[in-house]
Image (cartoon, rainbow, N blue to C red; front, side):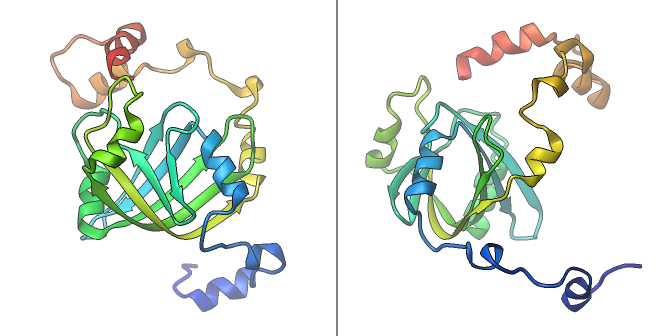
Length: 201
C-alpha cells in the first residue's frame, strides 16, 4: 500500500515527543560551534529550480568550515571537477541542508538554511592557509540546527574497524568508470588516482 498523505504517515508513526520535539534551534549554541570546529567532513544537500536533488561531500582539516557568528558559517569551495552541481543549485534556489560528522562519534549535526556564493576578499582570506585557496566560498545563514541521535551510525557500525573493507575487496574508481562509460582509456589504478589527486588536496 502506497502512503500518499501526511495524515497516513502520522497514523503509522504518531508524533514526536520529549527532546525530539523541541531540540531544533534557530542559532548555533556552544555545542554546535564545538562540533563544527572539530568536524573534518560534511554532506551538503541542494536542490535545483526544477526540483532535482544533489548531495555532495565536503572535507578538510578539522575546522575547515568557519563560524562567523551564531547564525552564519562559511564553507570554502575546494578545488573539484568543475561540475558545479551544488553551486548552480545554490544560485538557483539558495537552499542548503548540511550534515556534519565526527570520526568516532555516532551523534551527527544537522543544519538547514539559505546560502549564497561569495568572492569577498575578507571571507576568502580566512582560507589563505589552504594548499589550494578557494576561488569562492559559501555563506550559509542558519534557520534550523539540531543534533541527530546516534542510532543510524550505531546500527551501521560505521566507525568499527571490523566492517572496514580492504581496498582490494572493492573495485577501484578507475575500474567502475571504465565499466560504466566504456571509454577507450586504460583502467586507472587506485595508486595512480591517489597520486593524481594529491595536488588538489
